Length: 297
Image (tube, rainbow, N blue to C red):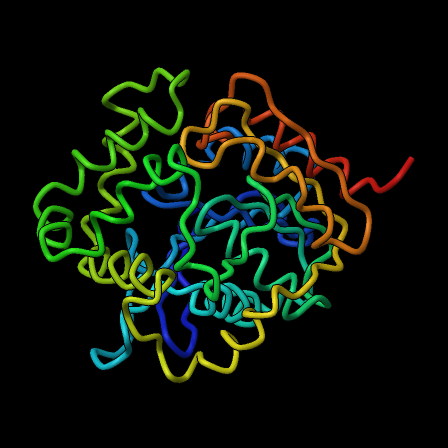
């Protein structure tokens, strides 16, 4: 069921499934995608009695800024704050979280900065909090090649290209990042409508420029960014999923991420799956959340 909730900054659109008194689970999409990431995850969890909430992030679909003068920031502190505000507005004291890419970053930020709000975490791709202080250091040549789109978006040509060709760019990235996933036009088009949000381009550009220290952040969020700069640990029980065929974040990148987690931790490599793991192998996400909810055996 589609609903909206108002926070201090946004009207957030979200889908809700399952009983009102069920175990809360929030599923968070990535860039460039939308809540359709969880189409085969949310119903399965709802059928098991969970209250499943799937919001559109800022800059996507029906989610809207309340004020024209609010910075259209996509920085990690903004994504985490939006998620915390979403939980506050719904009166949810604590929840299970699952996400990847931008959504995984929001989930990790909340788990690190407000640990009392997170019962358990499924983080696709590993520890997703950015280490912005090291953003200027070069990666291996192969990884620099994978991140071409980030360098493109640092330029005004890239800004104009995203504005004019957002669908073509997203479709290309889907194919590159999940090379084994054969999605059809209807699947892509259902999500691409979310990119028509009036703030999609501005939020995207700020996000990719801020993480590389080429754009200022929202001053209101600077205290949170300073807390995130130390790479804070995550205390929630966590299962990391990583697609073996992820075309932008290779599976070896999460090998050493256990150091960032202080409670129960399990890393699972999912064969064949790429970056859009929740669409390609939804059962892996359902099982991971089920394992967290049921607890150690």
